[in-house]
Length: 376
Picture 1 (cartoon, rainbow, N blue to C red):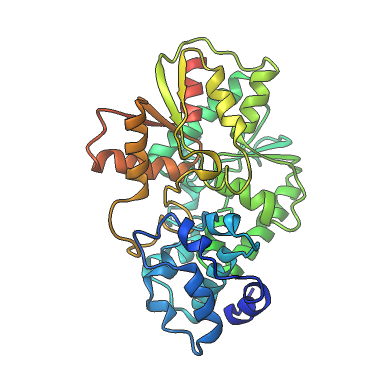
Picture 2 (tube, rainbow, N blue to C red):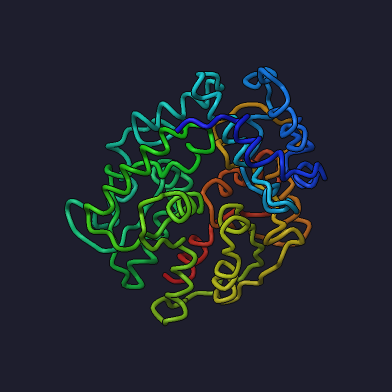
């Protein structure tokens, strides 16, 4: 799927953009990179050839959080322009080496890290999880790449399996048949690979008779919900499922948490898909969970910088990371735990807790882990 940024700019941006600067002013990485969306719109249209785009760090600094697009008074889809430029560069083979490796790894092994496909379900061996091909179910628990391979996020997948089993949810996973959802692949510019992943995954899901999908990651939720043209299956992020289980009496808390918790809204769950209430309802249901709301929350949540391929990009930004800023905001609030509901947020916050020297003041956990701790 080839997209010409110049045509895209002419058709979608030039006649809408009023050059107000809201996009640049709201960008969460504007202080750490030369990214200026207003300037990029004009340059992309008026400059021919493009001004050495492949060598410009700001092209790869964007996290695709969509703050710019959501705040634009004219409805300009700035993020789509960024993805179009990245697609243009990918078609020319002019992408950073780490991005190239992530794309090639996904093509070969089904995940951006290049881990062996046959090892994708190793984390679940001792959990008694049903796997499609060995068993059947109408509900797919789509684990995702990071929860399948990263040791830290595997703990989130394990927690969810235990919660679902305790609540009597009938589900199965794909095991080594699972491939990347492609959400970040599209945002790194490889539209053709995304299209292939979407087609292959859709065919597999329907072949297996899947009627419903539950995801660990908001990024997977976003891809299946909004960007798979032929899927036509109900998709839920796990927080939506847990709220239903709590409200219907299938999930019971047996322990008190006994600590203060603040919550970080992931961009792909909150800003882009308006799932704000469910995570907060879960935290409100946990006994002795003192919830503390950060000032920058919901639509105003500060991007952790894990999306848009930033997990695999090097450089492009300087100075203090947003994840560290977020950790310090949580500490200054007095919270003892910073909770989130996204694998990428979890990993960026874990790194920042360590590098900032605040590991003795605050813990970083996924909401699923907090529920698992209090329902055993």
